Length: 211
Image (cartoon, rainbow, N blue to C red; front, side):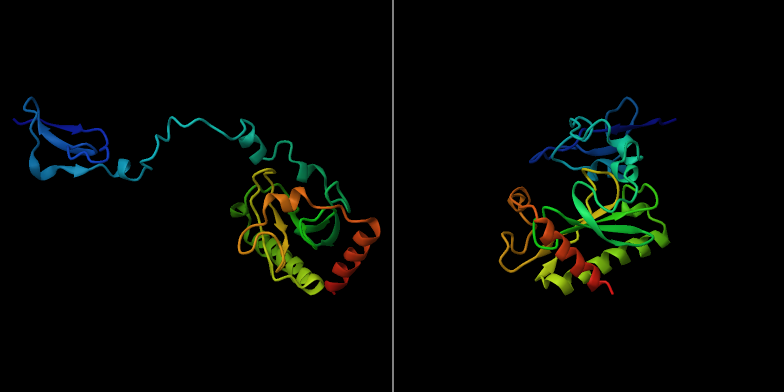
C-alpha cells in the first residue's frame, strides 16, 4: 500500500525559482513529489505580497467596533436640531437633514445627515433608505447649483470620524485651490466664519431654491 502525504512549501520570494508557494503530494518516506499532482496554493496567491496581514499593528481606535454599532453616536444623540455647533439646517425630510456650515470651506458647503436610526455605512441601508437618503442628497446638490452656480459639487460620504452616514457636499469653483482633486486641508483650516447676516441670507436663498 502506498501512503501519500501533503507537503506545502513557504511562499516564493522575488527571484526564487524553488517550489516555494506550492503544495504537492509525496510518497510517505520518499520525499519525492508525484509530479502530476503538484498545484499552487490559491490561498497564498490571493494575499498581498507586501506584508503579512496577521502581523500588522492596528491603527484604528479600539473603540471603533463599538462606535460602528452605534455606542455614543453623536448624530443619533443630537436628534434633529435646527442648528448645531457646525451649521444651520436648511433642508429636512423623512430621511435626512442638511446643514449649511458656519465655516464653509467653499461657498454653500453643506452636510447631509441620515436620520431615523443608526446606520454606519450606506451598504446597510434598506431599499427605502437608499432611495430616500440619496434623493435628499440630490435635492441638496440641485439647490446648491441653483444658488451658487459652482463648476462642480463633490459628495463625500466617508464616515471615518463619525460612524454614522453623512455626506459632505462642498461646491467647487473655477478658482479654488484643488482643481480636479479634493479640496486641500488648508481650504478647511483657513475657512472663515460667516457673519450672522450673511449666514441668514444664504439660508434664505437655499430654502427658496427648494421650492
